[in-house]
Image (cartoon, rainbow, N blue to C red):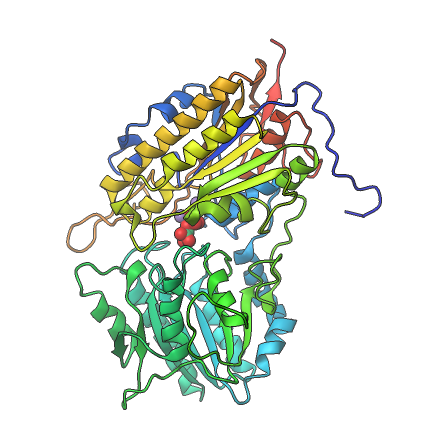
Length: 559
Ligand SMILES: O=C(O)[C@@H](CO)OP(=O)(O)O
Ligand SMILES: [Mn+2]
Ligand SMILES: [Mn+2]
């Protein structure tokens, strides 16, 4: 985009009026799948979402929310919130972190960049520490990328390497941590046979150790800091496979919430605390659950918890996690440059915007929606409201979460007349779906449906328009299936619970008294995806979308 001649001004839509209040509702983790007893959305009482479906095909359809439709490497990649909200807000498909890292590793460019050269300075005297999520889930990180990085770094002079693992069980099956640790141990032993002193140094479950987000609970990050940096944890083991196996013996244990542990040598000393002169790489490509640790590692002024000891290190992220904050300042791969998002365009065209969710999804409808950018485009035109999430619990014990509070805020914003777009994320289907608790997920879906109703009722009152959609699947399928769709059993004959997202498409529904009578979904965008939603919403606000946006899903026929 050349600077000369560029204008934020959007052309008027030839047929659709401006000035309608539009509710944009994102149901997190709400896909469309065959109805059976593991489809919690089907099992739950969801009269509002059911009634929207009756508008098919003119005002209800499905859109793609996984794989290449959202910029992921392959069609086997399930959708996730980052790429889903990026696509929804940006209206274009960007090659996402997973893919950018793949390309940089394949071409070797990762080793030529500023970030790698910066950390490499420490390889002579210091240890290289790699911290991140150990699985092949592909949402935050990928095992094969870690493996390539280990190989590449050791070939380029890293003589002492320590890996600080976070077990998954959220993007992959619970219990799969053992296999991933065994694979990593095998790789590290091969490195040792080549003379590299390489070991796992610490670990813990991702939801209990390190990977909190949006500052919901700093104690999670502190537990990680204590283990990774200070070498202190309640559990000590001589090896990580044994650690994970032992800790999983607690009947309440699961991969997502394993307690922190450190690996110690024969004299009981931790094998890999982070000390002055070391290099650290956080190898997750996804931002939200790495930003807090990045702050703790990078900020001189930091008061979220007592770091006790702040080693002088060279730190790089796999990507830069926040472009506005320039955090971290060193990184191995440049993040996608998502610019000219729909939020920025609309604000520049006078659309007053309200966005709301609870803490655990707040950044989704703001930061991710706006192309991984924090803050307002224009504070006098926008208001972002965060409803505090419960912390320190798994959401199956509180499946209603803050859905109704979010809906109340949205309702009040709609009725206030102060906003043209009121955008929310309703987290329940996703956050409770990730716990693998089917009963609780059914409750979660019911309450999300109630929240949608509250918002739609407000839209009805003000003569507005609604757009109800989702960012990817989760709650619609809670069981791992074989290729023909049959539930898979484990060796004890129990079904294998699916805690992860899915490859399913998601619904999008439009309606409300403000929707012009001739508006309907086009039939010539059959493979439409989340990136087509931005142009659609721009049209409903009375504007044509920029020409490089993915095409709109709607047309206006004469009535
Ligand atoms: O909880 C998360 O971090 C991911 C799953 O790893 O879910 P979502 O993409 O919905 O935020
Ligand atoms: Mn999501
Ligand atoms: Mn999720």
